Image 1 (cartoon, rainbow, N blue to C red):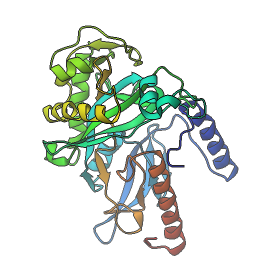
Image 2: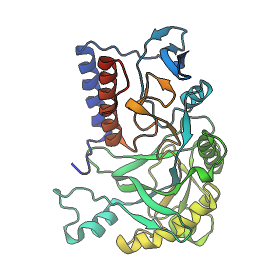
Image 3: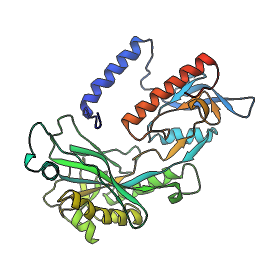
Image 4: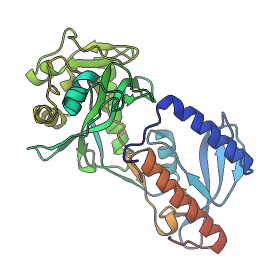
Length: 346
């Protein structure tokens, strides 16, 4: 499938079946256990060797093969690994806002007279524009008939994301409209991207009223450079709620300029996309990991043997499917390493 989608709630059942399979194959899952440290022994060639993981209760699990499949917001783990000397580098990601339209508008623009046909379901879109300031603005994680959700992982921050149920029957379509950035925008340290994200997430928290409501603005006001004071015909789906304000203070100036340039272009592809009453909600900062735990031969850490960084948090995927594929490749590399007793790239 080019656009696989089972719905957020159905995914719960899939994960339960995965857990049952792991148990049936002799695996163990430890709930309420947090890895707070990785034990690394000195090697003979200036490279470390994983020897175990330390849990928050003080227990240590001995191992010389560790697959590290953390999410892209595992900031405490990134800091711990950096402090342990594991090689980490900054990587590009994107920042921007969520946009909401009536799903019926997207359906009409995409399906014309066939909009609303039950066999077609809710329409989606994929948009990109290369801007005059050298940036690219594009739609990200488009959710037909979905909702904008709260996704912060830290106190005093506001982060947005999107989701759809399998039915895709909520009133609004939503998508991130984000702008690509690179380590040149947050230079100086491998973890500088995290500080960059946190700065704008804290700005969004303040602009939203410092109570975890999200800052929001009507597209017409955003394009005109004036704060919004009231909603129009589009009602935002974000819970616990939104506070109308000026979103230009919540993302970098170059991202504001890129989105303002991109919206009218997108409107030519989807009529009504830049409608005055469409709602922008901020901020979207967790498009992908801001770091890469650099891998070398055999999918292992560049300078720590036995450490296999995997998936999106490690900087090697940009979504569910690519993370799954990377996980399969890492699992095969671990198996080869255990069989051959050496690093082997597939």
